[in-house]
Each structure stands twice: as structure tokens, then as C-alpha cells.
Image (tube, rainbow, N blue to C red; front, top):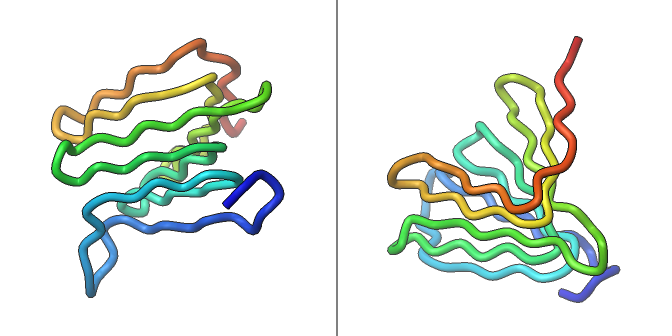
Length: 99
């Protein structure tokens, strides 16, 4: 969808199917294995490459919410290598943790 459309929700690691590749535009939310939520204007998921890329557009930030810790971080963009479980943050912003 375009900015202003209803959010595109994709869940990885859910029973009953396998998501191989997806791209979402607009207000996109991706829940990864019940551990993290990624909010972005553009999300790209590649199962074969085991990679997630997320970007914000027009001054918006990517938000990554760690559901286990309750922390939320913001960035201009991010690249998550799911094989090595490493996340590359581009122009990091704030990190908010529960008290």
C-alpha cells in the first residue's frame, strides 16, 4: 500500500505456512518469531537470503520493538541478517527502555 493505507501485517514463524519473500510499502509492521516488531515505511523480507531490510521515508524513522525486553529503538534504516542474527543500523536515533 501507499502511505496512509491500512498497515500491512506479516508474521514470520507462524504455523501453517512459509513466507518466502515479501515487500510492504506504507505503514508496514513485521512481527518476527514473536520476539521483535519492525515498523517501517518500506519492508523487504527475503527468506532465501535470510535478510530483512527496513527503511523510513520522508523523515520517518524505522522502529524496532524488542518484545522480550520492552525496548524500542529508532533508525533511518536497518538490515537484519537472520543467519548470523546481526542487525546493521543506519543513522541510529533513540533507544527507549522500560524503567
